[in-house]
Amino acid sequence: MRALNNQAFTQISTQLNSKLRDSLLLPQVVTATLELIMNKALALNHNKAISFAELKQKTLTLELAELSFPLSFTVNTSDSSAVVIVRSQTDSSDCTIKTSIKALKKLKAKQSLTQLIKQDELDVSGDIKIAQQFTHITQSLAIDWQSELARHLGDVPTHKLLQFSDKISKSISATAKQIETDISEYLVHEKRLLVTISEVTVFNRQAKELANEVNVISARIDQIFADLAEK
Amino acid sequence: MSSSDKNPQASDLPTNQQTPTDGDTSADNSAESKGTTHFGYKTIEKDDKISMVAGVFHSVAKQYDVMNDLMSFGIHRLWKRFTIDASGVRPGNTVLDLAGGTGDLTAKFSQLVGREGKVILADINSSMLNVGRDKLRDKGLVQNIEYVQANAEYLPFEENTFDIVTIAFGLRNVTDKDKALRSIYSVLKPGGRLLILEFSKPEHELLNKAYDFYSFNILPKIGELVAKDGASYQYLAESIRMHPDQETLKSMMDNAGFEQTSFKNLTGGVVALHKGYKF
Image (cartoon, rainbow over all chains, first blue to last red; front, side, top):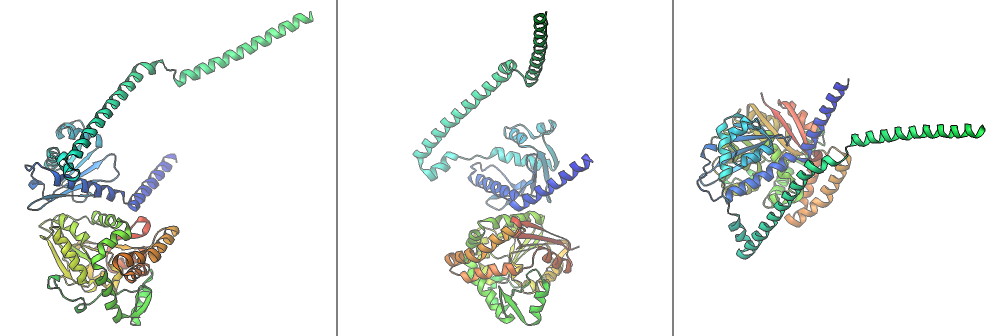
């Protein structure tokens, strides 16, 4: 009965999620944003050695554990440029990757695709060459952010802004490092000294038992004094 | 097939007319039998409607995209994205973007079908078609797009031509929707699908009331301010109310021969995407 209730609850919750997702168009908001960012990055790329020829009209689908909908990337090339169209569907994929954002970050850190597959962090079906090409392109993008900013802000403000952001980033990373050290210190040393909930419970129980025993003894003493007074 | 490159006049061709339905197809039929039809909430002679609907779209064509963004707060782009996602389009497909207007769906389809595929942007209104053609050419999309001025009720294509037919925010302006659905069914290949993106009936009463207030009080004012044409946007609001609701449109698709018909409400039912297959 409980299993049936759980099943019904899961079913209703899935239906509600799907209805809410369609109503709010969340996948479309995500794909539109990604498409904008990716195509802007491609437009700003200075590495002319990148070739999209092998990815022409090919579709890579990403099924991320953190997202309830797939993301598919299709490359459309013309004589002079390439654009990526991002959709939320799985109908016409040449290669599908099931993974998580954590594993993707490792891929960005130049850990090889095959290594992640061996570690069961990536599940690839379809043409693996397409996944390799996409990975290669994302790793080869060269964007000169300084020049791009300078075009809009001017040289001096850009220099100052980058100096400031460098300082902020150093400060953030130092703070993060300090927090990490503090947490490790706490976990390794201080946490051991802390009293756990079960220890507090046992202590409370023992204190209660002791209090009861004291009450009993106190009652007996009172009784003895009363008996003595009568004699 | 008449290409808009020849720039034919809208009046040379059969023109779409609005028919009242209000979720009831019998209303549609009764209006037709009397030789009258509806233009928004007004009942008019069918012949007058031809020039009146054409007038609306000739008038708004140039401001159409700006107005769409303003009126829907840009959400129309997400509704169209949803349609593309639901279409299952593949490289090499042949797609008909019916009542395609300024070509938002055509632009995406063109990139997805590639050079082996083809997209036909069809619209009954020459002004809309011209704006769409200019916009797509400015985007560099020229390889696989054809432009056709056509009436949805009499599609000038051979049977079993298209893998996908879409009609976004166009069906409510078609006079005989049943005839248009049958015409679309005929030009679809077996296995092909029709996607209808159209304003519909909001699911919740509160949303319905807010939507009504927005449509009849704010929308025409935005139209007056931006497109200098409040009347056209008053017509837009009225024509949305006269369009069949979700279930009625689904049964109309069933009657036209489509199978596995379904619909999804978007933004609380303000818009619905209907989908049906030809097998």
